[in-house]
Image 1 (cartoon, rainbow, N blue to C red):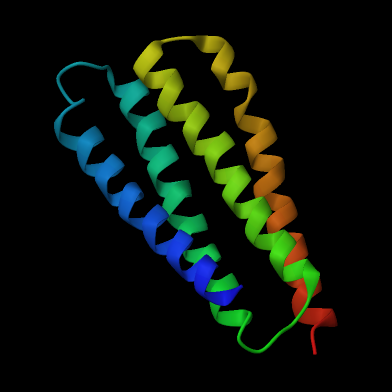
Image 2 (cartoon, helix red, strand yellow):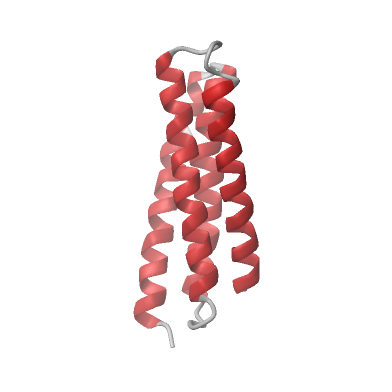
Length: 123
């Protein structure tokens, strides 16, 4: 389990850097300041949770618990829903995509709670 989360976290971090650079350079002249702030928020939260997936991978070396696997899954799904919906909102202009973002945020919070539980209960 630990290698999988180390790989997924690393790839997500790489995509976050690429998304940040894309937003700062390619989107700068095409979108207004509000859209660029939204894009930056998506990239920042993606990076935070890429690091969280790396932490899951590292913790999996010492802890054997299903809560840790759940934490990784929540971080992954939350990143896709939270950051993905914000990226899509900026690129498409479809405001309804903003309704998906809080679901992703809830998944990210669930990931942190599952991670804490894994540490508390882990052996």
